Amino acid sequence: MDLNFSAEDIAFRDEVRAFIRDHYPAELREKIDEGEEMAKEDFLAWHKILHKKGWIAPAWPVEYGGTGWTATQRYIWSEETARADTVRLMPFGLSMVGPVIYTFGTPEQKAKFLPRILSGEDWWCQGYSEPGSGSDLASLRTRAERFTGDDGKEYYRVNGQKTWTTMAQHADWGFFLVRTDPAAKMQEGISFLLIDMKTPGITVRPIITLGGEHEVNEVWLEDVIVPVENRVFHENKGWTCAKFLLAHERTGIAGVAASKRNVERIKDVARATQDGGEALLANPFFKRKIAELEVDLAALEYTELRTLAGESSGKGPGPESSLLKIKGTEIQQRLTELALEAAGTYGAPYFRSMGEGDNSFAVGPDSARRVAPVYFNMRKTSIYGGSNEIQRNIIAKMVLGL
Ligand SMILES: Cc1cc2nc3c(=O)[nH]c(=O)nc-3n(C[C@H](O)[C@H](O)[C@H](O)COP(=O)(O)OP(=O)(O)OC[C@H]3O[C@@H](n4cnc5c(N)ncnc54)[C@H](O)[C@@H]3O)c2cc1C
Image 1 (cartoon, rainbow, N blue to C red):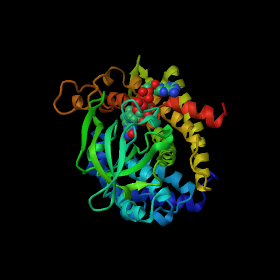
Image 2: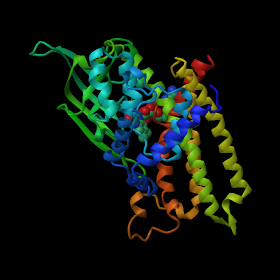
Image 3: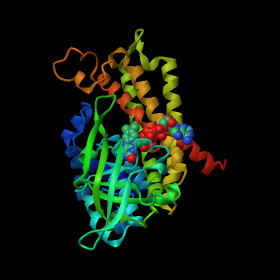
Image 4: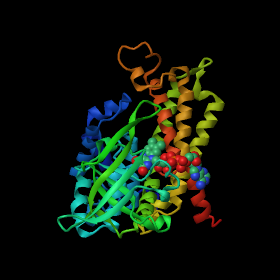
């Protein structure tokens, strides 16, 4: 991949920059600057603007609604959206189930689901993890039993529990891993089902996180009836779709462009923070930590670019996505630690609501009050998408051949 931008790339970058400047909603910018929790409509507002422009799915093949951008243009796109700090697009439809459907789905599934993922009409959630089946995902126990309905059609009856289901409270559809053959070897008895979240028998219960947010849920499935036509790929071969999806999920978690923006933010805070009469940024110990982070981030960026270049020449993200996941999330967590250090004692209040309104906790600079909730929230990154310990096991086996 050539990293020297051509004249066309620079023109493309200017076009993207102008589009974001002219079309990104000011109220979303304010909400992000204030550190407010985003509502479903906020996520969808930007999604719909990008859909109208035809820029909602740069990674998809053109025939299914992708942009046809080169790897460099996709890189520029992620740089520019991170630089502008636009609200993140929900990955469950665009980056997870969408690629599974256009790769493994039937023509009917593609026609039914892909346009609605692109338009934002359907909000998706991911039903993989269960209590007791997270790292050891293939041990999952949610059971789907096949039967013929009174109408002569084939159905599954699904019973079980999923957990940590992100944003399921907003979801119209969920993609679920279920066990269709309990007698088969673990990975061989699993199927991949698309389930309408309004189906009777589904209950979504909130799990409130350490930072006081409602981001994850438990999902209970009790005698949920799902048409067999909603199964993607063959019965008992869902593990193939599951692994394919996880590789896409992990590559997306690295978040290099956003981390680059956050390094600049920390520098701003450290410039404004006094440490023994001088700016914290002038402190050699603090400066060294920032420099180490920037070096690691540059190395990660080149690894991500290599993966992107591989993808654009037809190579799907393989086990190297585990490497991106580990390094990317470690850097994200280190960033939140440094931000907390830069905010000092003003970073202490940690519930979002504690910094709002006429509130005696609201002391110190605005930026400092948002640091602790982000610090707590980002602890999740080394766990979700498959924990970092598990990613190390994958690298040992698939990359190092141990
Ligand atoms: C914020 C958040 C959002 C999430 N969103 C979703 C979602 O939308 N949908 C979904 O399906 N899941 C989701 N998850 C679940 C996530 O994928 C799991 O939490 C993760 O796979 C770990 O599983 P577990 O929590 O059961 O931990 P466990 O598997 O019980 O692991 C506990 C600890 O033991 C370590 N460990 C386990 N096995 C090994 C091993 N073989 N070698 C070395 N160390 C090991 C792990 O690394 C971890 O530190 C989410 C999780 C979080 C935190």
